[in-house]
Length: 404
Length: 228
Image (cartoon, rainbow over all chains, first blue to last red; front, side):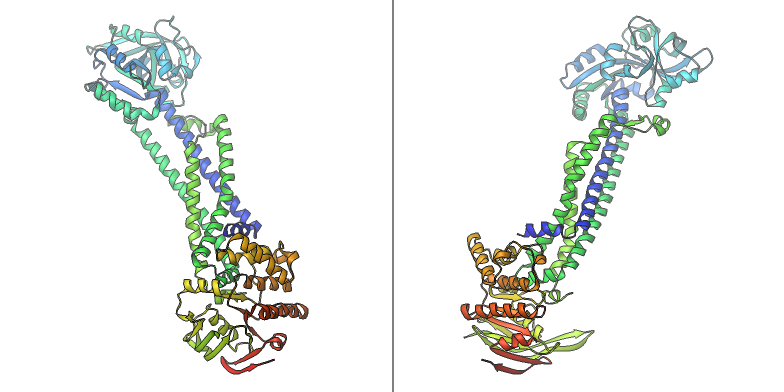
């Protein structure tokens, strides 16, 4: 009966209740949508830095990580590669050459990171081929082909099929160089990376060095990204003389940014819940004040304090929870729609590229976030109901009954 | 046998620290089956005394004993439970629960008493029939006249099978016909079920029907007269 009274009381002041229900719906939708937007934002950023740049785990010669000198190669790379390939958690793994040198066109030059890749395996690891906007990804036919970022193309005043010279320090300390032809121009959402990185076939790289088996980097992606810490620890243990790092160690700024955004989101949700809480307290306090005489009568005829308290609590929670499914449903629809079609932030594209972020955001929410928000709303309603309920049980029946 | 003993009860309110006596040294005894009216002008202490008898207010001095139980010493929560089991209330402004139907309003108090469903349904039907509202069982208070609402309130007061009923100016908001009808119903119940009724009123229609008229003047019992 208390549940019935509480439910019917909600609809006594239909407009006021609808405003609260609308506020709850809007609050939940806004909270969830912002979470999903930031989630999509983080996903894009992670996708850029993990899937297309760092991969999940990288292995280097410890000395190479110190000063990036080309002579610090991975010893017996094929053996390490085979061991990692046999790890059931690893989806794909590749060997790379890395050198820091100079890329020169007939008119100018620029400092670049030169990465030698196995084009076939690299597709599986970073899927870098999708960023090639002009020309082709390595086709296996063209010797000394190079993929150059659009930004570097602009800077060097070159175009497709232009010849450029890559120069870097060889293993013996002497400068080595090779002429390469632009076979493809790529464009990622990371403008800085596009300006400072070129990709060549690792066979061509090694040919310039005069060595067939030089590799500086082993990069791998995992079947389950959430296992990165476990697999990283296992490989570290397996190869104690090598420097094994997960993307979290390779890009701590990404981790920090991720944590920071998550923290901001919690604050934002806290602010939403605080606003919602005050709206509920206000509404329920008004309801208690308006029904002083009725509550006094109920207490006079025998409704004890715990039942009076419970009745107001039930009413508050019911009022809040009417809006909850609408908010969650609306959020689900919006997140699903924009998650598929994306939200274009083209107006901010240039700025975002400088931070290595895409101008398209695909909102994303883990399913448990919906439950977390529902629980947060429930807790907010529970807390917000306490004060009006206390006000109700503090009423003196003798005075309350005669209140006009 | 006395149902209610009011011994030397006084109540003093404080208005900005100034003591305002509402009831002074009242001693009254009510026996089972009485149909008594507390009368007097506004401010004479009728409602205060009724509230003290019903445990809605505590006296500053004195005691109220209901069937051997000193209710002035009961805690608030025990007093609520005592009221639920022993006292029926009828208020001037009907005070029904507006979101419940007549049936639900009457049933509510029995739910609080945790009576079985079958008993509740039977008694609700009986009581609403007794007050002549068997055709208004599923009607909400805002769809009923004042007289009808007050009859539901009487049915509700009786639903808990109380020892006595306290009615605070029950006819004040009713027209003559409704008031007479209500008094007939309460009189019948007093006669047939031997339920004690105590009214606070200054309505001559109630005073005429009361068996005992207690007059309060400035919080003091100035007369206590039995009527035929």
